[in-house]
Image (cartoon, rainbow, N blue to C red; front, side, top):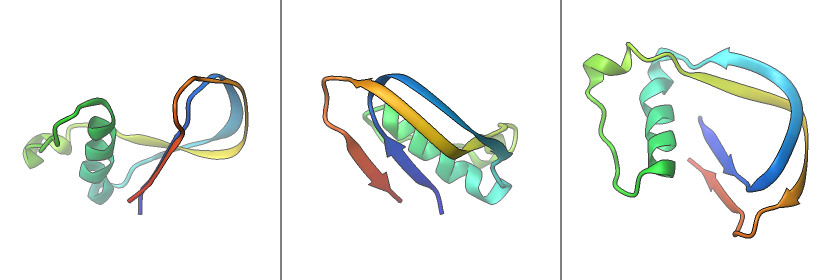
Length: 77
């Protein structure tokens, strides 16, 4: 399962670890990322997805300050 949490802050500091996204999760991870930045749903050619390296950050702790002037959205997929 991939969870994407979107917040808007001007300054964020944290610690955690980076993990490689499993091959079977790559297309979903890329789709979530592209949908965040592109208004139209994006379809990937499966023969090119395996050429892309995806990483995820497992956050241990995080602090943030100076919230941006926009709504906070929580997306769980």
